[in-house]
Image 1 (cartoon, helix red, strand yellow):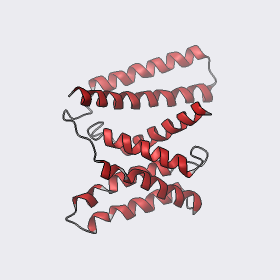
Image 2 (cartoon, rainbow, N blue to C red):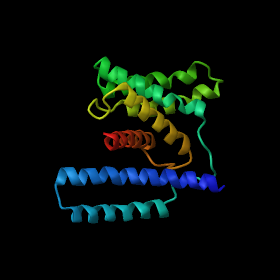
Image 3 (tube, rainbow, N blue to C red):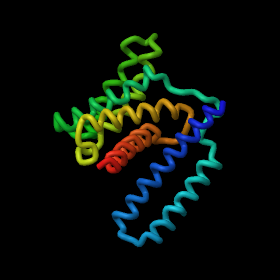
Length: 187
């Protein structure tokens, strides 16, 4: 039970820290303000986020995780979308729309298969990763890395942020920001 609570806490803190990291980059780069004003803004936003996470009922009380055999399709969706978008030069919206439409028909291949019914969500989550610009994710290796991180986030967040729109996009965004941040730290 303690392990499940620790994983839940880790996922919530990861999302919150990535939101703050992204907001800090925006505030610092775009508005060219002093460090004090940026710090006050980030602290204010942090308090609002903490209030939201603490007092809003966003989670189920039971602990479930998505199966590895299902989330393995997230990097596959990311790679497919990236290849269609960048190498076929169709653009990210057309690529994601094409893949999303195609995978929505997977459950009709075998209507009795529970496995096929679970595949559209992780593949579509991967397409959000694959929609990234070549300036943000410059190679297929980065796409695969961000897809694996997104798969991990999707697996651990099955019962988190329920009823909140944009969960798949947020997972993809968090994974791309995480990989970009790691690349920035190493470089």
